Image (cartoon, rainbow, N blue to C red; front, side, top):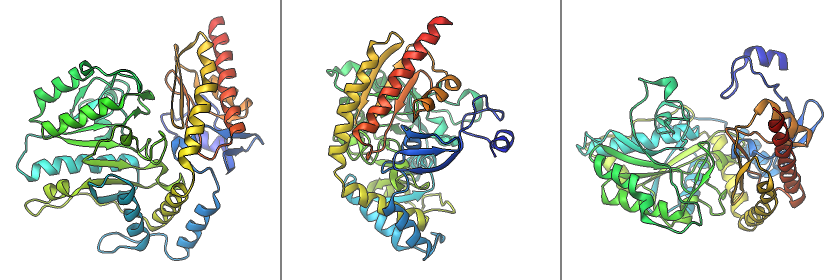
Length: 427
């Protein structure tokens, strides 16, 4: 099977003939992946940050099984169903009170596409046809579809590969101040300058609140987010928050924007929405935005085949119930304190530039690029699944991880980085 995979199946951001050996997963339980080789490894990645309750969760399995016996899917055009209605009710209850409308889609990238369409249609329907740009941030990441790609970092993103095809947007410097760094309004100079100069053509600003994810795992000050919100309001520009990676407790707040107490015009969620069981996302917005979109008899121009898939919505309902009825705040606070203490050891290594932690996110930034083909088997030998990228070794553990299991992860990170430092020194 692995040979067939190697010859025929494409994997994310990988050549058709990958250099690194693929690991075949037989099953997954709790925080562990069971590999074909017989090894049992702790998953430090939560399957790209989505599996917050662990694997093979009885409550989620049961929700999926019950919904399968009713219907796995039905079109959402002209029809509706209880799982979608219940999920919408819960999402509106736990997000900002200004958010009153929900569009369900089948992936985080598509939820961003919908958000961008909302912003463009909002202004266009009111005759503001010059507003055809998005103001985005360097080091940002919002997905791999064309609209989402166009607002990702212009250097580390995929702009070069699709030069001349992507929509041309405007970029400003990545948020500079660290989370707890003292505030100075000079941090806003580039953003404010770009907004002042181009606000007549900018439909919206898009930003990952508090943590920039795949663009570099950067954690920044809530004050920055507050000032962005204020300036968007001042210049009649919509404020889109991409909480696909940070939503549902990951940063210690249910949604990362709560650290700053700001109000988004449009909010994107996904990843952990179903507890990592299947793909589902949502774009939430205000009555003001929807009224603007629909002015002149218009409607939002989007409609995926699997929109509001009943099976995914049923699992999402079970996942949110499990999360909201758990002591998730205490669990994440404990994870954060443990990560700060145990990953902090890595700062003694010369190859380590910085350790950053917020909530259930731990990042070790190195002074040199990581070597995926080298480090992956080393982590497996230590009994963990950690997938570095760029010059970062990071983990986003499941909220249900035990103290001992988390220590196993952090110890493995320290030992592998120490060995990597030695290998790099000998090269």
